[in-house]
Image (cartoon, rainbow, N blue to C red):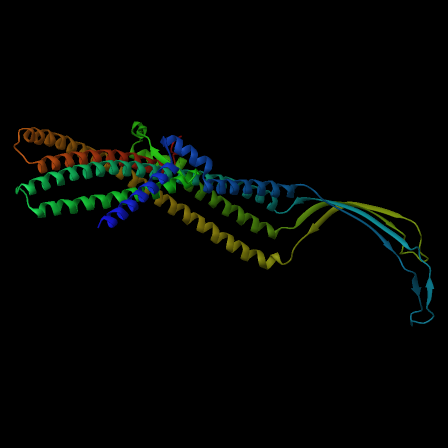
Length: 443
């Protein structure tokens, strides 16, 4: 028996040392919500991906603009020419003819498209629109990341409050168990009372474990999103309650969403892009006209017999016209496809408007509801405080049992927790509303 107790003590001591080392390994730091949002914008991998896409679109625009510049081709070659053979038409009387063996060729040709059915200009306009869409996608990612991080931050604060309440409840329950055990030894309480409260204590400890694990999970998600080290322990700051909640009237919220929401702007731009694609497809019906100029410097002159061992330079300039006859039966199919895309973008814009209207209405309703809940919880908290004061006075006068006193204390703690959580829900629903109308949190 002594050996078992000794082994149990050693195991408990080792567990305590491991736990203390894990706590020491974590670096706890208090962050304001504004600081968390700044870190999210600076370090989010999703935002870096969106920024890369935006830069890619800008590069694509610069590349497409090069179609306005002239095309210049240069060729240079040097080669060996073998002796020629001349013969009669019936392939008889063949004999060799000596040729100059060194040949050279240098050519330069330049062309400038002056008409392509508007395809070049429309392609550039389309690329600029796609660049704007990429910027809006970045803005949307920024909104999503800020809202996500805000949710994590407020969840951490809620769990922090819950942990404090459960620790207090555990402390009070342990005191109560000791008092009931004392009364049991005096024959004033039953063993079942002790068992019932021990079971309650175990349930409280289990709930505390779940709260601490949830805190670790959310802290890890937040740390990864912010680009901090895995050992960082984020502690939410109470300054979050100092937020000024300024909300426009419900009638103006949808108009603000139309003006600010990246999804709506992207839908409108995608419709414009589809119109540009239709014009690009239609441009295939027209010929391409270009100004051309070229210069050739060749030697020897092989078209003369006997061959002239001289260099020959020639040049020309003029207008070239090129038309693809296949466009007469292919372009109609391209235009049908472009029209379908245009209709798709129109439907997508309408659908996005409907979803936005519904989302804004839900967010505004939940925001108002959170205020109403806060009012109810504040009333409950005042009643719990009054009840605690009355029970405490009666307990001091030995008119009630310790169990009633502890119940009143727990009720007071839970009411206070509900008030804090209700305030956090107000803040969360405020930020949710800001997200739905396209306002960037923290700016």
